[in-house]
Length: 349
Image (cartoon, rainbow, N blue to C red; front, side, top):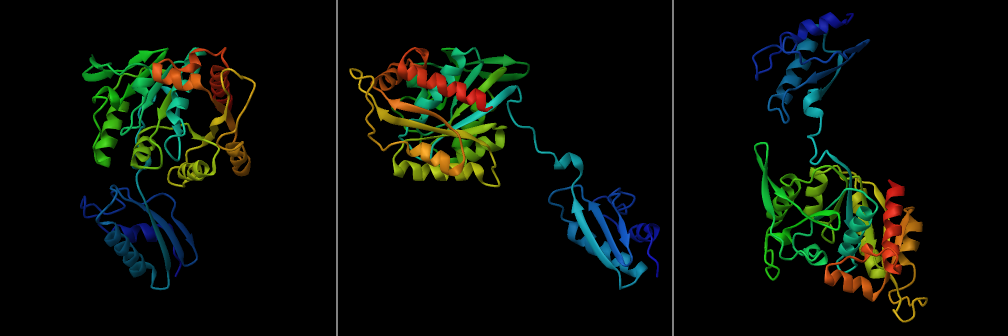
């Protein structure tokens, strides 16, 4: 028996989709890629829902209808699809932001927030419009680094929405969960509560048009990271680590998270923090307290750029405690290190 397209479409007119009561041809569920090669029939059915409770039964009914018309020897392959409007991913938040950069670390205590804060300031010093989100819900430190511990966010009405107005200092727009809790108060929340709070700081704030949106992420790999990656078009990640082996081991896990098939966020490069200690009275001396060039070796091993090496200098610590990031002084050795980091990030992008 010769099988031809009209034979198949006529057979499928006997198959009804229970959701509408129409047959699948009338409902427009047969995609226009019907292929017939001898006794082989390949076709695609488009279902209106995901998941669709009628999918399996309709596919079986379609196979039975074709065999009843074309004979039992026919080989049938039916694939299923969703309509185009359901295939499209939902729009991400902050479409008016040019670059979203996640500053990340595999473990705490490596200076990730210091790098995020100074990178944001260094970019602002170069004339870019910069936003900085303290996404470390359980350990927010940016309010202190910017001397904004007493800042209380206000709201403003934009259209029919009430929006949070970020703090603005040193040319950087800033929000942190630390603005909404007392400094001595622990944030004791389950994961979903923390994720929802983070989503509010992203979606319900008036960030405006930005060149860079810097995310100071929590250390490690958690559902907070997944929330950010689901809600934002993250341009790339920067991994911060110190040179010693225990930190590098955790840095590898952070790298693996962003390279995971389900996340697949490009890694812009690595930053080695606390690369060496330089005492103020001996500015030319370098003491490698945590090992020498461990992050540099890691970057070469895995084929990622080393974006910068930040020395361990007393002024960086003091500037963070005093709320005046050292990147405000690019003429100083430590300020110059962050200026170079910002330039490397811009070049990489």
